[in-house]
Image 1 (spheres, rainbow, N blue to C red):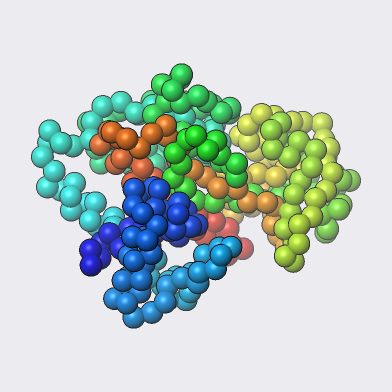
Image 2 (cartoon, rainbow, N blue to C red):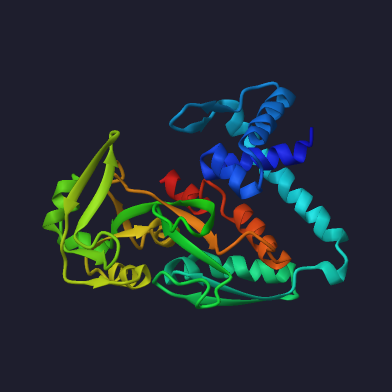
Amino acid sequence: MDRLQAMRVFVSVVDLGSQSAAADQLDLSRPVVSRYLAELEDWVGARLMHRTTRKLSLTAAGSEILPRCRQMLELSSDMQAAVTEPDEAPRGLLRISVSTSFGQAQLADAMAAFVKRYPGVSIDLQMLDRTVNLVDERIDLAIRTSNDLDPNLIARRLTVCRSVICASPAYLHEHPAPQRVEELSEHNCLTHSYFGKSLWHFEQDGESQSVTVQGNISANEASTLLRATLAGAGVAMLPSYQAGVHIVSGELIRLLPQAEPRQMNIYAVYASRKHMPTTLRCMLDFLVLRFPQEPVWDVELDRL
């Protein structure tokens, strides 16, 4: 058994949520993916995943093995990079589209690390809060937050986008903090023009719940809503990758932690996997490792 490939298959199945999606991403057949998973389980001596017709979930052993598989794959990439001939190293320009909020909060630092590792690569970051046409706008890779992607595009799931309800201490000094999601309708809610303009969705105690909201400020990108929230303008639903650091510092107060706003997935999207340039392939592998399934930016937030 190619144990490294078996680990790669296992990680892909977990990240993408299904064996068929992993098979498409890795250009393998579904039976081959199943065989790799079975052989990996035989090797470690434990069942790694619960398989049902509806979803896959990790066993306790799978949760223990997953981060170690990621480390092995990263080490393998580092070893290959260490012996790669200079002429074969990634080089050239990559044009990447990303939302302003994720670009500023997370991707800019990641790109700094990438070009330090691959100095022959140049990055052109297009901070756009709209869906771009990859071909027409000559975009090599787009980072998108969505649960409904265009099926004609190739997507590699990176991580999850959680949101938090928050407000500044100054706002809460003048307005009693909501104790139930229904009370949000009584507050000045700062809303996103494209996501939750008038209706916020939650999962609470295993059930879906929605509440109508309204306020005097809306914007088409989350960075503006963050600044307005910090200034005490109202209550906002903001991505945790952006608001988490301000909640940890005390600049913002997290509200209704028992109610989880609806989650979305963060994907790396590209037009075709055929004849993929080495630079783009390296970028995809880098992003998968940089943004694992459990977001690193939520670790400290979840401790509060």
